[in-house]
Amino acid sequence: GAGVSQSPRYKVAKRGQDVALRCDPISGHVSLFWYQQALGQGPEFLTYFQNEAQLDKSGLPSDRFFAERPEGSVSTLKIQRTQQEDSAVYLCASSLVWTPGGEQFFGPGTRLTVL
Amino acid sequence: AQRVTQPEKLLSVFKGAPVELKCNYSYSGSPELFWYVQYSRQRLQLLLRHISRESIKGFTADLNKGETSFHLKKPFAQEEDSAMYYCALEGGANNLFFGTGTRLTVIP
Image 1: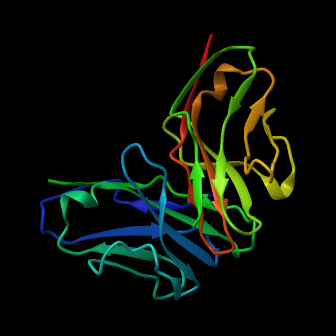
Image 2: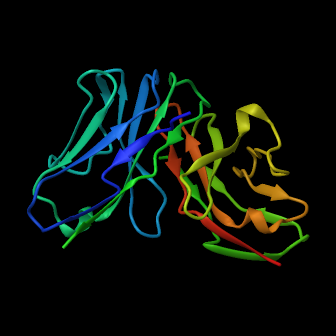
């Protein structure tokens, strides 16, 4: 079956540009997560949705980062006025319904390079 | 504060040798712990989780609350075990805290 998909897989942006990263979760998955993975580091939590509701955005590093999931399915992570420190792999994950100890299913990631 | 420490960035073992990937955590409550794995050119995927107390691909992990550890073990390493391994903690919230990962190389 189809897993979590993300697009684009690679994105190069000039400093100051806005970018939008897309995540298509597994069909029927209620919970959706975004993570940022810098080179040589583990993934770091950015934000969490349950359906269309953004229940936790405590990991977003600045107000330049914005995420939405308007219809409770596809999600978009937007980064405004990109900076070099935004260069990272952005991972999306989904789960059927979040429960303690539940499995998250990850997408392939989008590698963002800011020049 | 929640923290996951994987002290080894790189670990090499010979095929057939035992392997142990270390993970220590810091959390004031009762955590849920996971091992995620990323094989070459594949996406991050769940290997095993404490709550299930299962053995996957010959790997096991025991939660030691006294030592705050969740080390991953396998008695006989195989070449296909070569991958990046991440220990992760779910601390009562709806997200995972990951360690920095250990790259395991199994030498034929």
